[in-house]
Image 1: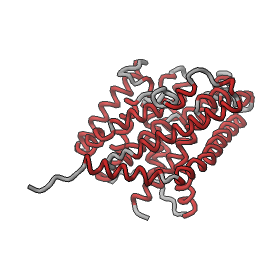
Image 2 (image 1 turned 180 degrees about the vertical axis):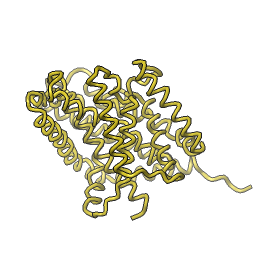
Image 3 (image 1 turned 120 degrees about the vertical axis):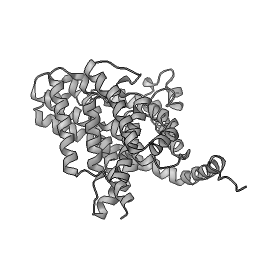
Image 4 (image 1 turned 45 degrees about the horizontal axis):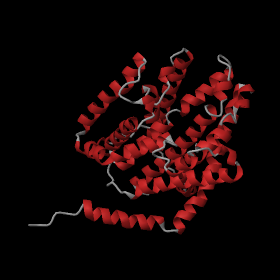
Length: 357
């Protein structure tokens, strides 16, 4: 297997792991495990350790985008197919509720389902499309700057955007705690920077060291949280950023030899986005996800942990299996072929080579 394929297999593993982490966050948060856990108890501490361990997931997704996208030419097919996937699920799930639970369909529900990006149905997808707009410009900067200059620039950005806000407990520059396209752009650049380091400086830390850094940063953030410094637990926190970069490097260094493992990852990873789109759909979010795990808070810490992990795994698995139907339908209508023709047309319009004079 080529180095590129090896790298991508590890990245796809990270994509799946990150989505599992997101399911964990939602089990603990919207599922109300955290809300019903009594402060100071072993269960409370266990729930928060799981929460902080999974908090890097969103940053990891943006890091992946920058890592694999910084050398690729922008193709309109990519955001289009993602947009179609988003609309597919917003309309399908809304239609299902209109049939089986029509009392939950209120004024504006259908309009929001048709325009999910502009109506902020999924905050990450709205922020993602905002990031995509600037992808060509970011790629130009990432690839053109010398590695040293890029490293110093990113270090300055992190100091201003991460460390100072955490120290002074403020939210500045419209970062909104990381729930913004601006923050995803910063993480995209960080992902491109990691790609440059690997390519030009052969930066490949051992997996064990990356895992150690991950647990160390999570442990410190957990300690600070228990001591009342909750501001160190958000997407822009330097400790959460470090944990995300560490787990990213750990997965990027994975090279599975087993063909079955590679095939499983290749088969399942494309459904990761659908896991998010299905269980975070506003109707499912409020009707099924809200409070579903609150009973876990009454269990001993080890049962709470096992049930939370198990529930997140069930959400990930069930939603992934559902997405097999969507993937089959998209293949049936040759959507990829149609969009590739659009890419070819735009390639001629915007990247037509200069004629010799």
